[in-house]
Image: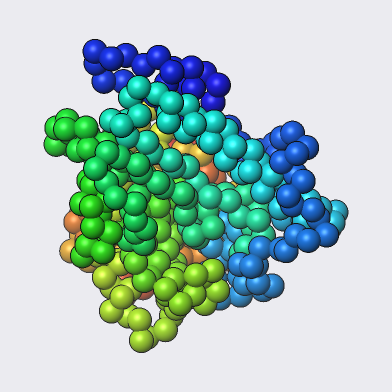
Length: 373
């Protein structure tokens, strides 16, 4: 904040300038000067209003796996929950004070009347909501962030339309009078800055691990899709903390279908360290069509697993765990490919959409590429 304030005191006058100011807090560790803890005494702190015991009961297994980590049970057991919330609030208070120093410097700057200011963050944080502590989930506690834009000629307003941080590039180029490249993702938000009540057809995408795991937010509903095709749906206009999963409620089938159609469809496989991102180098493996599928072996080595479906019907994928149990892992649509990651020694079964067994495969050391004709 101090360095940026010095730059604002003497900005270039003969050309445009760009300054990026990143505050480390409220990232962990939550250590800030004691005076920023003072407004949040432990005896007056309330636990997060979004916390609900047994909130995972209506969540599919993939969501439960993301939610349940070791941190939250440890924090509860040690009696440090309120102290953790206090540290988080104090860190935000500190970051807010540093932001105030920067804005004070801008107010004194000769470029204050023609400078665009954007305040945003990269992710939210669970403080026990969904029985989770930390980040990396598809729920709003993790994905909602502050976004404020101050620009010359824009009147103050509040907008509740779904937008994304990926929209900032096109927005900044538009506000600056710069033409953005055509291949840039995102949506120009400047129309919303001028009219926050504008009819807005766009949704916001939150990408999780892999191209088939993501969340989509409209103004009234939020949808979460996991790589194994498990789903969640929330009416966030009435259920802001996402306590009631509506994905299996037939009354919302039309909304589910719409979100499914809006999901990302051109994913790129994750590249692991030391691996080529060319699936063509992954060995072609034949399915075992005769023997009973074996349980998966324990392994920490991840390798590519690619399925090419050249048939005229959809395929179903099942993972066989170490106990020999089948776990549905999604589909491969007809005449399409699916590229994902597996562990060496893991066992997979492929069936057609009618449940006919087409074969199984144990993933070898260099990964596997299979083709279904």
